Length: 96
Image 1: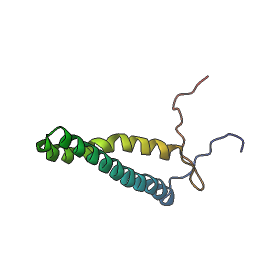
Image 2: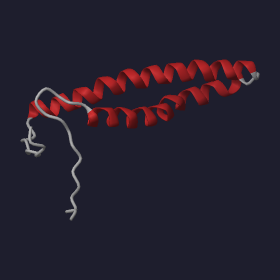
Image 3: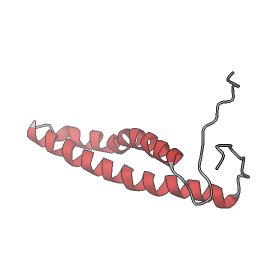
């Protein structure tokens, strides 16, 4: 390759490929992170004798943990090479 960027049409196939790459990672890693955090927080609350706080904390925990997970997943997908394309961020400002 000569280092040039060649714009590609945003087809449904490419859109689905990017969506699926995001979706399965978000679901899997968010669920795993929330489960691990729930066990850790649950154990901590039992150890400090505050089981009464478990319900409200465990209700919001998946939302709180999913934010950093989703940012990490988006970053990973942006760096991924798909079969016939990759996603590149291009400056809208001309340098030079």
